[in-house]
Image (cartoon, rainbow, N blue to C red; front, side):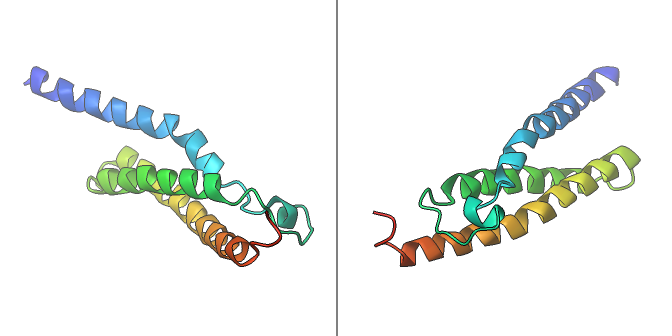
Length: 115
């Protein structure tokens, strides 16, 4: 019976480690989509919000999966806490992804500015 439990414990430890390792990816997804607007200016950022979109979607996928997988076992307090943290990270990423999509559309309209 102990041998059956070890692969589950190993999988849980690997899952928690993956969430911790993915935290910098989520932080990169929280960068501002337009640095000029973040500094208080009103310019068009010609670098495009591509990295913000990439890291934001990747972080949303990882932490969304973490929320679902840990939320299934909501009766265990540690898993409920981990699922709650994953949901909070997802809720932080969603508005930033929406801003990045808006900035991408604005950059597409201003093709003559960014040559």
